[in-house]
Amino acid sequence: MSRQTMAVLGLVAALGTAGTAAAQEDPTGKVKVFLKGGVGNYTGTRGNFVQVGPSWGATLNLQPLRFLGFEIGYEGAYNPISSAGVFDLALTRHGGSALAKLSLPFIEVVRPFVGVGVGGSYVFAEGTLLGGYRSGLVGELPLAAGVEFNVGKLTAGARATYRLLLSEDLSNQVEDPSGGFFDVVATVGLRF
Image 1: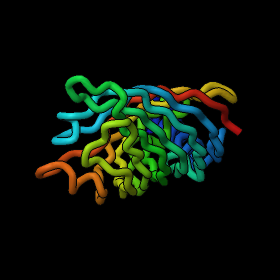
Image 2: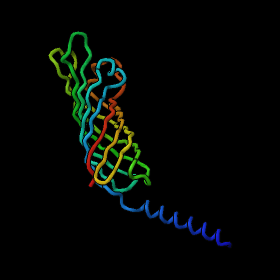
Image 3: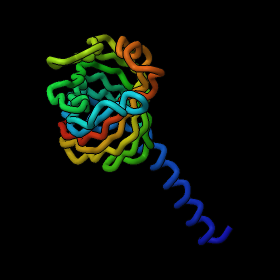
Image 4: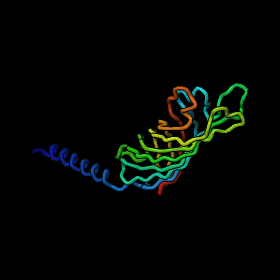
């Protein structure tokens, strides 16, 4: 073999070994705590009578592997009900969810991800002229996609989450209910 061939083979072997070692290293920031805030609304039939409103939350993220993370968090939202002449009707939700996240293992600073989980919330129907609306428990299946930016101890990002509503008391009050809850939020927090 020529020297050039040996040098190329040596370089390929060194890069392969370095890439494998980097993929097996412990991720920095195995624990993240962050706040989130943005806007959200109900989709489908529910979206016809509910307006966009603020959405907020707090999340604890555990990252045991570079490509796999787990989140547990609190979410809330406030959505006014659009009804002619009635301005104090609203749906307020408070709930929690657990989410498994998958991301690319070799990117640390800018990390796109997708996630799926399970959750639930309690939706409060508020206002003086509620008509047939009642408060109730809602089972949810959250599906998320987003990107995180990690620098030192800081983490920030943006995500969109669609929560398929599995069961809810409000479904009996709307003819042929469909849809879920969709929100887009920004996140900011710390890594430990």
